[in-house]
Length: 140
Image (cartoon, rainbow, N blue to C red; front, side, top):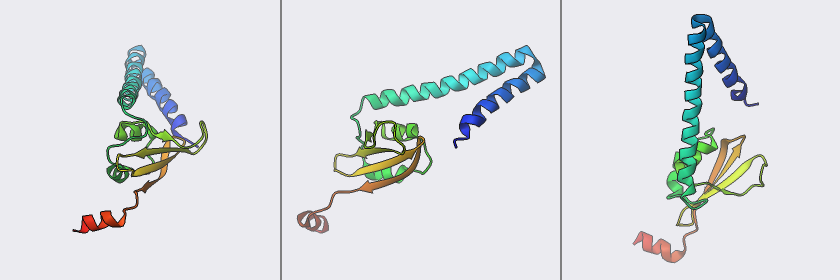
């Protein structure tokens, strides 16, 4: 169960109630203004991240290796979209849990991320196999 869906509204109500108890109507006005500002900051961040992602190809990342190194378990999908500046290519069915997205780079390396309830649960990076001619060119 996602406790933030419960605790955030309870915290907001407690914050406004505490402001009422301490300062009456001026406290309610200031605390409500602070809550609205907090909501607007999150909304502005979301719109900025999605507008940057709208200008990039779906499922593309500059370097899959660097993207793989930066991933941490438990980050939300919006954070991952902000890191890649691209929407992931959906591999799972719509509205199905867990959600699976793929980001690939120009070298055919790709990272497949699995999200459950919007939080990153696991990821797997795949690199293309090198041929014998590429291996000898690298070792020379």
